[in-house]
Image 1 (cartoon, rainbow, N blue to C red):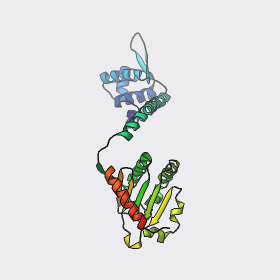
Image 2 (image 1 turned 90 degrees about the horizontal axis):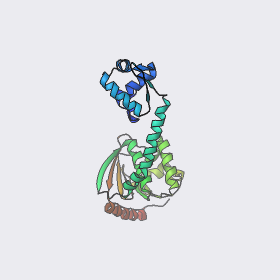
Image 3 (image 1 turned 120 degrees about the vertical axis):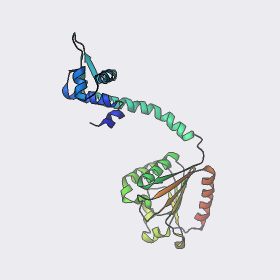
Image 4 (image 1 turned 60 degrees about the vertical axis):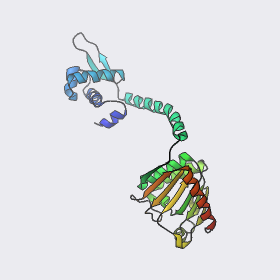
Length: 250
């Protein structure tokens, strides 16, 4: 029995046990249900009536003892659809509050490939130009292929621009690497003597520093230090353009 799945549909553990018991055994009295589900009789009675209110169990009236039976399991899909409908109604207002909140300056950390996916979601949410110093093609790690393609497709649709100053090693490894980018990319290269194993990335009010990087890899121990500060992001963008003007063109 997957109790967690039932709980995600709004059922308590006792409700889940009783429903599965009735699905398996069919019409039963309260005592038999309590024994089958291994629940105290009083708790079984309360749970059954909650299941009736949720439309998952129906009551069969009798002159001796009322009996109960389970509704077709397809009803669970209806519960899921109802939750999805409720969530869809809530989301626009929640997203509006999230986007327009006056967030204070803050700092936090992402890690590994899941951290990279979080950054992609943040980029799409913010929807502003991106500025990267020391890019190493880590987004093109083969393990990130499906998520990367979905991200780049949506970024292209939203016309999000990317300004990348790649490390020299990218050009040395593959001079045509930047050409595989789907669009909205302008790029230059750092001089060879300024290559590092880190990256600085700025978009919107966010500044992200990546550490422990290798060419075309995003490892599980890669750390992303995320700062949220409008003033600091504006400053980094100015420094970016200074470095851009000093970097080599294609």
